[in-house]
Amino acid sequence: MRKSVKRTAALLALALISGCVSSGVEKRDPKSYLKDRAEKPMDQRKKVAVADFVDKSQYGKERTGAAAADILNTALVESEQFKVFERERLSKVIDEQKLGQSGAVDPTTAAKAGQLIGVDYVFCGTVSNVSFHVETFNAVLVQKKKQIAEVVVDVRMIDATTGQIIFAKQGDGQADTAATGSLGLGGGSSYNQSLLGEALRAAIFQMLDEMIDKAERTGR
Image 1 (cartoon, rainbow, N blue to C red):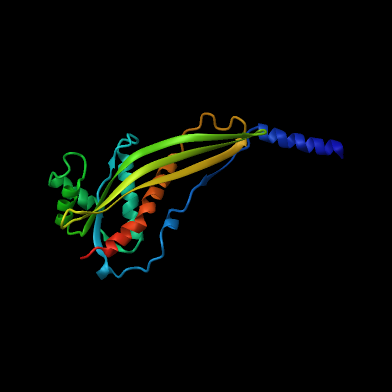
Image 2 (tube, rainbow, N blue to C red):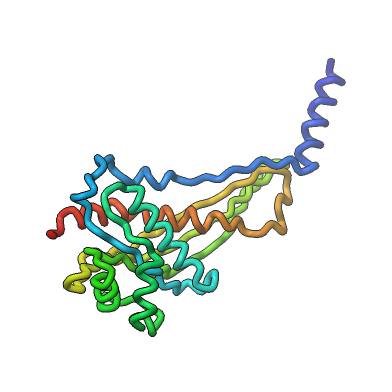
């Protein structure tokens, strides 16, 4: 009996040392930030469009800004509170009218483009920071390694008629993925790129409730 127990323990230890790994993504559901709202009738919805975000993070060669704008655009559609115009339509107007020559969409630019396509509000913003880092926790024969993505996003909502900024807020988002296995786990592993999208989504949903409330309180 004792030999059998020792043999089982030895096999378990060998399995750990051989590098058996389990992993999973740890994240908060972005929609947990939102309160329940009834679907707004189409004739009562305000018309909005989302401009490309400026990417100041130096990460992803400006793709991060486009990704943030796509996430916000989709979130506004899913909220069932707005009539959301295609982003390409707004971008085309900005390009045709030479409104974005500086590479940034400022309130004046956003208002002019918004007027031309007939929306009430234009959303624009900036991805100001993107960072990745790894945390490692060691125990007996076991190591847990966590990859963490963090972002900072600024969003503004601009009245297309007046050019006034009626909402401005900064949100920060985080997402991480963890793997557990034997010591030395994943020493050369690359970053999980999907974490960036999850972190952007968390940052934007952190602000979405206030955006909707602000649009609801504003006239027109």
